[in-house]
Amino acid sequence: MNVQSQQVHELMQNDEEFHSLVDQHNHLEDRLHELTSKPYLSEPEHFEEVNLKKQKLQLKDRMEDIMRRHQQAHT
Image (cartoon, rainbow, N blue to C red; front, side):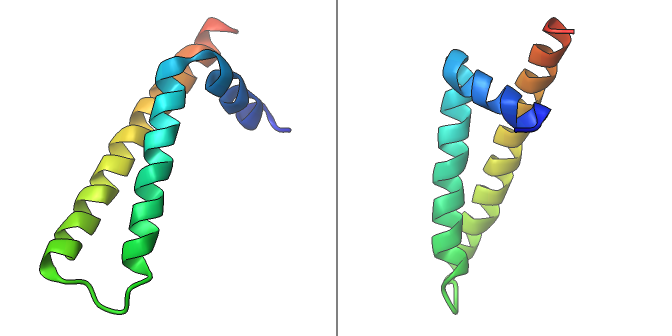
């Protein structure tokens, strides 16, 4: 297990906010996969796809911030 995956594992177990963010990110990823597997997206679906991608990026930024703070606290 590399250092980053170790850190993610530890945060998943010990940080409720991080765990929630990962769950939300996974949920968005699943929905995005549903949309991208369609041969054609309606206009509302396309709008949803764009919004899902933005939300995923926001969640990822928040998770990376938590990871950065965790790493700084443990060095």
